[in-house]
Amino acid sequence: MKILIKNGRIIDPSQDIDGIGEVFIENGKIRETTIVQKRRSTEARKVKTSELSNFRTIDASGCIVIPGLVDMHTHLREPGFEYKETIKTGTKAAARGGFTAVCCMPNTNPVNDTIAVTEFIIKKALQEGSCTVYPIGAITKSQKSEELAELEALKRSGCVAFSDDGRPVTNSLIMRHALEYSKIFDVPIISHCEDLYLSEGGVMNEGFVSTILGLRGIPKAAEEIMVARDLALCQLTGGKLHIAHVSTKGSVDLIRQAKERGINVTAETCPHYFSLTDESLVSYDTNFKVNPPVRTEKDVEAIKQGLKDGTIDVIATDHAPHHIDDKTKEFDAAAFGISGLETAFSLGLQLVEQGILNLKQLIINMSVTPSVIMRIPKGTLSSGSDADIAIINLEHSFVVDSSRFLSKGKNSPFNGWSLKGTVEKTISMGKVHDWT
Ligand code: DOR
Ligand code: ZN
Image 1 (tube, rainbow, N blue to C red):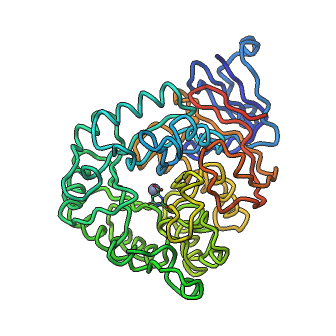
Image 2: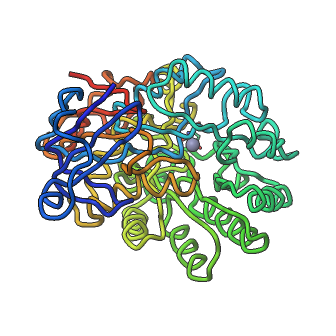
């Protein structure tokens, strides 16, 4: 299958490209990306005009054409929780959101702490997936913080990183060893930073609003203590540490200082941490219940500043789909998590509208940098790379209707929000997905 995407504004930060141009796709790979204005004055297009009739043409007028988004923090729920999401539905949701690659967290059932589970995920994704899936293996067996998983075997079978996400690694010695291995294997250790003693029983941010609502709070220190610990262990070991879902100003400050001291750390936040505050919980709507919890205006501002100055490297979704029965409960009993793949880019675009990031930076945060951190060959439109592309109309607005999500998880706090930026087409390994 040969495809030509034309008339779109191509933005590929990996090659420092921004302009109206053409992308030629052949056999699932990018054959050529050229900027039309540049070409007239300097170089000639390599694809000959006589060949053009062999290409299916996609007219991307009025749209941006960018490297497919890469989510380094997705929960696909399979195996074990197929009633919440499957590899098939989760990757459809990813494609709908402009993502062409997702890295899936190991808190499935069984946990992805064995070669068998890793191989199952990879095989299933190849058979049924709408985008590329990279498994993340567990740091500890059954995510129990008692014993390291077989990291080397997991890496050899296809895991691109390790995390006990959903839970912290409570044992600092085990975390030390994991970081030592991360240096040897050159794979990131993704840390879910939470002091379980401090957060126990908490369901939202601890502060004024939790007091008013009578809900048990999770203090910011529950996150920051573990960020500080892991930064210290990262310094000790020289390992490759990535901090997941940063939610507080204190964490941003700690990471900024650590980077200034030359510590090998990267960090992500998620759209809900720069779009929502704990005041939104006055509705007692469990769709706002997420771990770590959404915080305060001061934290939101610090997260934005952290993205602006590069302290936070990545916007990931922490796509955490849940069945309606897990959310339609009293607040204390409802599951933590937000179904995020289908709103992430548009929420990121709000940062561009607010002047916090420019479009290029947003694409770097959502495609280029996660690919670099995970060492996966994505996030570029360069010749010879996988034909992974998102075509997005930045001006089109839409009203979020989570009942129409392709994800099984309809649990979105953004339901009813009016957002800009519609994903018109996602092309994954040369295969076109659209919804018209
Ligand atoms: O809100 C969350 N949901 N936070 C996590 O750390 C885990 C996730 C899940 O798996 O549902
Ligand atoms: Zn997660």
